[in-house]
Amino acid sequence: MALTPEQILSAHKANIETVFGLTAKAFEGVEKLIELNVNASRAALAEAAAHSQALAAAKDVQELVNLQTAYFQPLAEKTAAYNRHIFNIASNTGAELQKALEDKAGQYQQSFNGLIEATAKNAPAGSETAVAMMKSAVSAANNAFESVQKAVKQASDMAEANIKAVTTAAPAPKGKA
Image 1: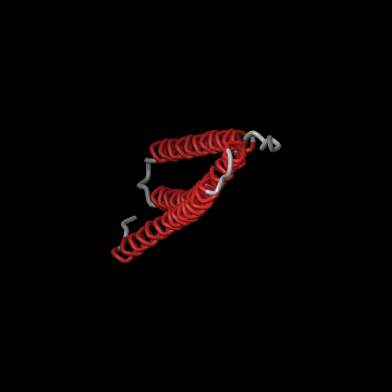
Image 2: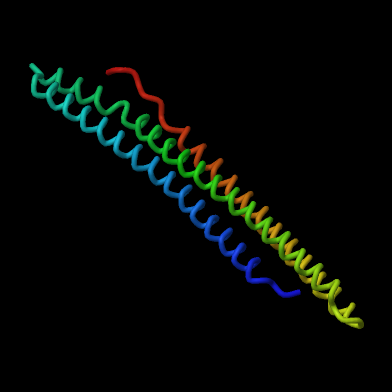
């Protein structure tokens, strides 16, 4: 069974659409990270400016120490929140890309299996053994691919759980001194 130019062109167009779709999803994630960083930088700059003004207006050493303590105590919590935002953006973007790739891989697998079936139907007489061997090899490859996908998913889930555990284990802010 030969592929027609229309089928080849259609497959090429579908591949281009997939590439641009995946690229758009990746850029959405990058845009979210840039927005997060701009907002975090803006907030940090505003806090630093306000803190500097408060320090300049301090009347004695005790007030200076209290201002410094109040400024640095919530830092770990803010850092953990920032890291959680980064993790959420990265994991959501990764999940979208993974789903799109899995869907596309499933489509390719179905197309390839259809091509194998069509080839087997049009095989010359006496080639049943070769066709059976080819089908067996394709089946084994499909099973191996599915096993790899499951292993990658498990590793990804484990890494996600570990990162969530680390970002939620940030020390709680202490009371004022």
